[in-house]
Length: 267
Image 1: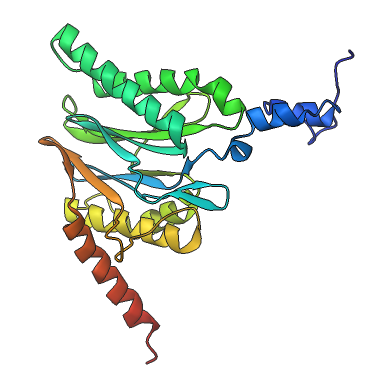
Image 2 (image 1 turned 45 degrees about the horizontal axis):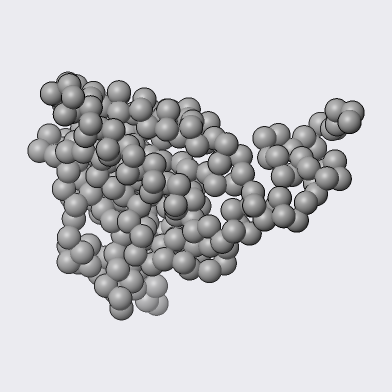
């Protein structure tokens, strides 16, 4: 068979099913096998991380979607990796959660064998290699795009990284967002961010970013007071990982609701 040629702008790139469709070798069975949407694979949505004066804050909504359906309302996308680091996931939920479990196990194994924990940058490199290993699945539509953040005990500061589907890792200076609502969330953080944020202010800003993302993006779940479901928000500093209680988040989102209502009332 002759090699197919494409005009500029028509190259399907790494999308193998799309390549088959373009050259007339479309297969219903193959498309169903390689299309994550056709399989009804749950996808996680919006996660953010930002630095504050003594560490980092991570936050993620709880909704997972499969196409136009809500498949899960209580998924936890922000997960503790070890005492001083955490992972936030967006993309295909199944491969992402499996990747996080394996990452946790590898960090624990390293600490038991070596007698000390891996450096924060070493952890980021390890996660990068795992994302790269998922590239064949990513080319079939099951992409995993995590955020990694933690407190660097050597530099005595919070650090955060984001990744692309090929395993490329990029350290961000102040804040990062990933997922379908990342544009709205990152805009909120960009407007409200300062280099001297306190932990409380950083938590409020992260919570607000998830709220605004959920207001615009249907695949992002906001706070659900009726069911008692709130985004996962955690802070990491020199003392380690701390997850905020739902009661604390309920108070913070209550203040956001009152602020929004006050703005919408006619003068």
